[in-house]
Amino acid sequence: MTTEVQTNKMIVIDGVDGSGKGVQSRRLLQSLQDAGLQAILTREPGGSSAAEDIRGLLVTGEPEKWDSMTELLLMYAARRSHLRDTVWPALATGKWVISDRYADSSRAFQGIAGNLGLDTVEQIHRVTVGEFEPALVLILDLPESIALQRAHDRGGDEDRFEKKGADYHARVRDAFLQVAATDPARYHVIEADRSMDQVSQAIIEVVNQHFDLRLQANREIV
Image (cartoon, rainbow, N blue to C red; front, top):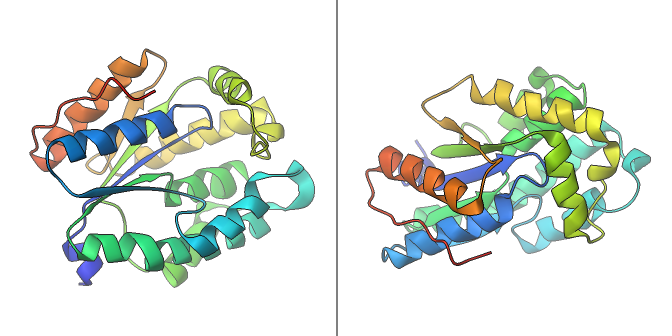
C-alpha cells in the first residue's frame, strides 16, 4: 500500500459542465479550513504547472480538433502530472485535497459519451495511475439543458466540450450516474437543481457522515 492511499483524504466533486462544481468545491474547502483542517483545492484538467499547459489544449477550440482517444491520452498525461506534483505530495503530508473533477470525468466524457468504452479507459488508468482512487466522489447531477445554459451564461473561451451539444451532454450525465451506481459507498449523487445553499448543505452532510466530521456549510462564497 502506498503512502498516498494510507493518508487518503481526497474528495472529488464531479459532474456535467455547469453543475456548480467550482463554487461547491470552494465552499467545501472553506468549510474544512474553518474547522482548522489543512486543505488544498485543485482541478482537472490542470492542477499542476504542466497539467495546466495541457488544459488549454483540451478545453479551448473546436470540438472536432481531437477525437475521443486523443482527448483521453491528453487527459491522462495531465492527470499523471497532477497526481505526482500536487495531489500525492499533499496527501502524504496529511492534507485534505478537494479536486474539481478527476478520473470519472474521463470515464464519462471519453469512455461512455465518447464511445471508447470503460475497458479502454480503465486500461490507461491502471497504467498511468495504478490502484489509487479518491476517498469520496460527489457527483453533482442536474438536467443537461440547465447545466449547459449555466455554462453558457458563465462565458469564457473554455467551451470546447460545451460545443459538443445537448445530446452529447445528456450521454455524459447518464454516464456519471452509471459510474456512481458501481460503488455506492464511495460515490454520492447530489441533486444540483436547487439553490447553492441547499447543495452545499447536502454536500456537508455527506462529507460529515463519510469522514465522521462536524463541518459547517459555507454560504458566503459564490
